[in-house]
Image 1 (spheres, rainbow, N blue to C red):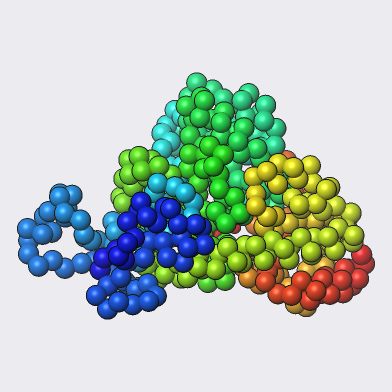
Image 2 (cartoon, rainbow, N blue to C red; image 1 turned 180 degrees about the horizontal axis):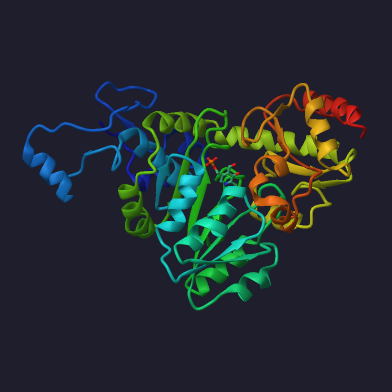
Length: 402
Ligand SMILES: Cc1ncc(COP(=O)(O)O)c(C=O)c1O
C-alpha cells in the first residue's frame, strides 16, 4: 500500500478542486486497483517485533491499530483536507462525534465558549448541557449580530462555535468578521460547515481556525452513512484533536470512509445542481407562503453576506406557514414525491418540521428564542427534476389550504 505515484502533498495541493475531489489522497495497493480499497481490519501484523516497536515509537511509518490509523480512513482524511484547503483533517463516526471532539479536545474546566443561538439541536445541546457539566461556561449570542460576539468575550473565552447558514433558521453569520475577531483576541473559531461543504463555502479563506462537518450530509450526499470530519492546522489536529480522538475512539468505520470517498467524487456536481434546483423551487415557494428563509432571495436579510461567503445557495431552505403545526404537518402529509425526512444534503428531496423533530428537545421556549415556530418547515432540495418537485409542492400546498 503506498501513495499513488506523483501524489505528494506539494503536487496535490496545486490541483484544482475538481481534480482533488476525484484523485486527492489516493493510495494504491500492489493490486493496482482503480477505486480505493476498503481495509476492513481492526489490526495489523508485522514481520518482526522490531518493526512493531519502531512503529509504536514513531520511528517508522505504518499502521498499528485502526483506532490510530487505517488506510481507507486516511485516504478520506487527506481528500477532505485537500478540498478544504486545510493542512490536516481527521474523520469521526458522525457529525456530532466531530463537533464533540472539536470542542472537548481544546476546552477545559474554567474556560468559556461563545456560541450561536440558531444551530442544529444537538450542537446547542453540547453548549447548553454537556460543556457546563465539565465546568465550561457558555454564552449564547445572535450570530448575525457582530457586536454581540465582541460583547460576549471574557478573559477566559477560548472558542467561538457556530454554523452558517444555520439549521433551520438560515441565519447567515459574518465569517470574516467573527473569525477575524476571534483571531485578534486569541480565540479559536470552530465552524460547522455541514450545510455548504467546501464545494460551496470554505471558512478557512475567511480566517476560521477549525472547520467541522457532518459528512452524513452533502459529502456522502446519498443518505447512506453517518460520518464526521474536523479540519485545521497540523498543530491543532496533531496536538489537540489526535490525543483526544485516539484515546476516546469516535472513529469512522473504513467502510463508511470509503462510501464518503465515493460521495466526494460527485460533491461539486451535486452541490451546484442541488443549489440550482433549490433556487428554482425557492422562487416557486416564495409565491405561496407568508415567509421564506432562503439565502439567495431578496427577502433574506443576509443575502449580500451569503453571496459574499458562499458560491451558491446550497440545497436547504426553510419557510413558515401561518397555520402552525397543524398546517405544517398537513402539508407534509400531502406530499407525494418529496419524502418526510429529517436528513439533509441527500440527492432526494426531503422535508421536515423542525419543531417536532430536529429541534423537539429544545422545548417550546428554546425554540421560540431560536426563531423556530410551529409553522416552520425545512426542505432539502435534491437532484430530481425541479419541475416535478414544484408540481408536488403545488398540489400539497393546495391540499394544505395554501
Ligand atoms: C448543521 C449540522 N451539524 C451537525 C449535525 C450532526 O450530524 P450527524 O447527524 O452526522 O451526527 C447535523 C445533522 O443534522 C447538522 O445539520
